[in-house]
Image (tube, rainbow, N blue to C red; front, side):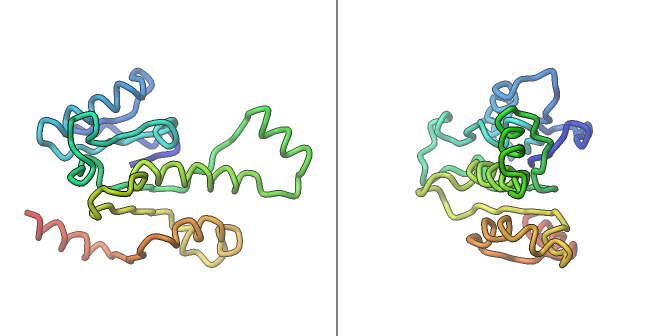
Length: 172
């Protein structure tokens, strides 16, 4: 799961949880170690996990066609952030009419999705869950059009809580 801020993460036993005391590399190593031990780990991640980490079975000796180390990506909220870089500020000053925050969010979302769907030969068991209610709110239709186009290339399925419970019972 990708979060936007550390404060949104709780203490969840048995999961790899991003915290400020462990590096991204350490979190990745914990996730892969749990997968290698036969578990189906869940990594609650923030920050650099959106854009700068490759999580696959390659490091565990798993060939692409059988790589199911990472199959599900859950995005509770779209990755809007407060970009304070000099580059961003310069863009804003030079072309204030452009929706730079939206472009930044679109890029971050594409990079986050790439954590899951980057390679061609992986099994077709990948699922993306975007839980942000703004995507279905008509008030955001025009504003989030670019985000909807990015997500539109993936198969869309609407789930209810009853559907989720039913799926879980089938797996048990």
